[in-house]
Length: 281
Image 1: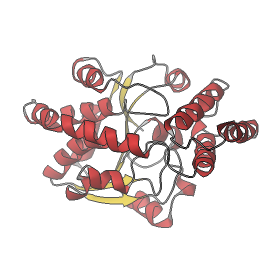
Image 2: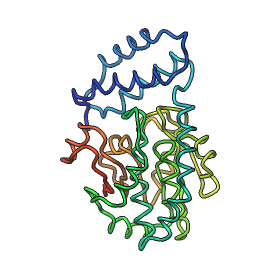
Image 3: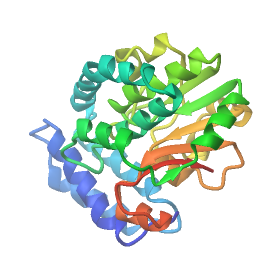
Image 4: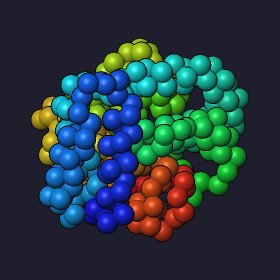
């Protein structure tokens, strides 16, 4: 993917959402916005949008002196944990628990503060369980899971991490060794080790960080330790639109689970916005 002209208003929207989420009342928000605009002017449009948004969110955090999404992340983890018992029952009572858990993992991808200012999690759950998935490579996914022992699971957002836990639990129960990957430091509402601890994911599987604060997974910006894990992984499960943007053409056996939440990505895929995907690389 490359950065489209339609990405530019989204960059500004993300900045405004982050600034409004902050309680730093004595910070000059206009100065931060001007610095963001200067980064946008220098944006490399040959790269995916995640490159520019990474720089933008660094400016925002540095300007505010804090993570503007910290409290929201914790709150959405609690919301998702409140839904967990009911969702777990849905998985266990279904004909194919792995498929149901995968659908719920896609449903959780709606929790994205970079795109939405209000989020209807329960509607997303109903839609994921009942509606058609636009790209559903589940037969290939199931075959790949069956043929793999070690699985690298690239997490996306806080809150959503609880939905991922449902799928990870099914994989672990099937005898798979799963390593879940969080960000090395805060960016947007992406999951970090704190979120894995809050949601008890660390009790289910090994959790590692990728040593990066980038949106998605920009391999050259991750740590050598993570790249080693990525290179030796038999199977990669990649959550979220940011990871889909930044891991194109990988020769790893990879499955992308996400909702197409913006017009640019939807156009690239030839799908309508809001489409759900379980897509083989």
